[in-house]
Length: 624
Image (cartoon, rainbow, N blue to C red):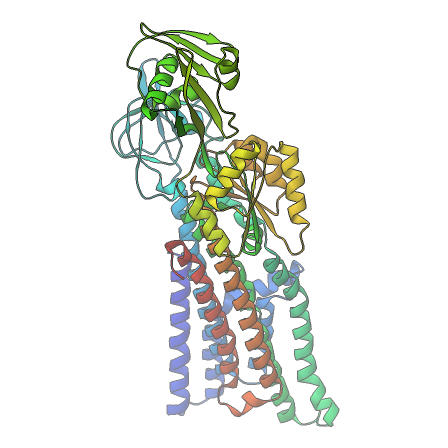
């Protein structure tokens, strides 16, 4: 039986005993009723709160005196001492209802994390000596061949040796559409093979796999506390002893100061007010709702393929007002593609001649040209080291390469300083040039636009030349860019950005060379799906999808979470202060069941704060 179910049964029994006792009290005249009443209310009280009493006692022996268990114990025991049996039992029941609600809220939040844990594969099929053997993924070595059938989770990262299929990557990247993979492509652990059979060569052990790293990040995310959480810890450390001391003074000083120390009714009145003061002072709403708010935010981000290594980074991300990007692999795809063709006469002629010259090469430049044009004739190709290619066909001689190759052969060509330029000439006549550059990701411009709309300044730090950097920055609408940067130069520029008044700076990167600047930034964000292991280890936040728009999603979740936490702090402190004052000056004395009203105020604030915290979790579904 679950803990919540046991608590619900205990609370229900305690309520029944309390209600029956109250009915008997006001409807019957039983001999020795005062002792029976005490016994029944004590039974209800113990059924509901024996664990609170036990925790209070054990915590005292462990040096943890001033916590909510201690406050509830001395307040309710004090209520019994002054004859308020019904109030004491009711207060403990209401407190336990609040605790039950809290556990339910935490359990709800943990389900988001538990859903992520389902990505862990429990077994894998490996080919050994020609036989398929089922083992735990941790028993598989690098370089072994694993077999992944339809419906199986991919147990280890690897390269497809044979086969093709559609892969469900939603648990890792948050993307709902399946991805089609073929031989030669890399697949990552935690995804699901939807159809077909894959033979995959492993490129890492289970401990180094994507799924293992994700689980480790999520499991340890709450160990890094946000400043708001640290504030609550420090606040409670001083707050609880202070309110206990004030409650003691409230119960003892007035009768002594007024000279009514011989009047038991006066003592009873002020002791009752002290009990109310203690009930209301319990900082449950703060202690519970603030960590729960951050936990909900981390869970919400995880469901979108955004892994936050600690609530402190979530709070910092909400405050980020400057975002610096690496270019290659972050804003761009990190591969070559033909972006422009500048012909002297016909575009098709330039591409066709280039394709003929490059048809036997596996160089990325040749591959990018072959994607847009195919060679129509065979040629004898000679490589001219450091300059390009000479291709000879039955009808013509083709030169394809850099400007130096053209100049060496007496061919005039324009000087171009943008991307990688391939000049093409046929029979000593210049026919045009092809510009090959890194492709910009489809959603990079939208990501920059979203971040600027949220009030962030955008900066690009790249090792590319000035012309390339200027073109990419212009196409994306980036505010500022710095080009020709080495890794140490990026760190220097980032430090300059951090020195701007009021600046909180995030850096987004994916390569090994980005690790130093990721560590330097206030918040380091790694593009995890294709990023290097070093970048992912160094970063504070990991995006498991390579879409830059995930950055604005992460910032939206962070900002919403921080707003919710702040609302909880203000709400809890404001209401508690108000009720503490009215309980101290005796306003609640004029209300029947004043003690119950006092604890309802505390439980009510706690419930409202928890409900507010749970709003952080629905941000993952795109709700406000």
